[in-house]
Image (spheres, helix red, strand yellow):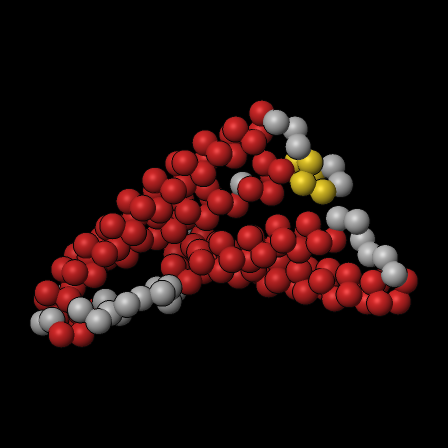
Length: 162
């Protein structure tokens, strides 16, 4: 199985994960509302699960946006530069984003490791640290993708980079 095929499968799994997380979040939130309005009570862990799913959806969505190079981009400066200068600025921007995401991944890993030492449950019997594992994972993936975008930008011919 080739690298391209593996990456395509991983991208589809990432997209599927995002859809499942978002669907679960919506269903749980709607269920909470319906239960509160019809029975006067709701799932004890429902609100906590929705908050955790917001974190997961946001970070998995950020991973997908970085993969598609559709992340937030402010190009006020690069619009007024020559194509070569814009490539250089964009490359430096991607390298900076790589470093920032890498540092964030490292410190969030330390944070999750610290949470692992405490056995605080987030909801039901799910520990808090397990809910937070998306933070270092997502930032590591985004760091690697930013590095890949920078490398591609610096090594590809100007017309092949979008």
